Image (cartoon, rainbow, N blue to C red; front, top):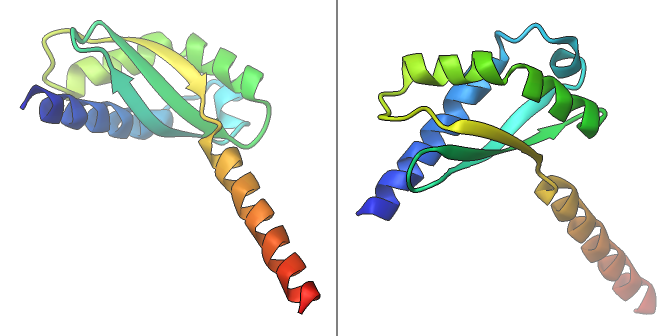
Length: 117
């Protein structure tokens, strides 16, 4: 039951942060087209690791997100009914690039197989 609750909290945090990003005016965030892919909140709700993807410089985007952490935490505190508002740690999500690379390799294998016939 607790795992189910944590999954809902993770989803809610990611969804609310994605909404809050629309209100951010930090140039490093706006210019890099950041999207929140998922969030993982610790069982004690003190910390949350937030995964993001971006079009642009990931280091610059992470720095911009760190600058906006206070505003983003405030948004979470006002919209989610949590006992504790977690501290946010932003991490670049490499799963999209990884998935694209796998798709590229599969396409190469497929085209090599077609050449052999």
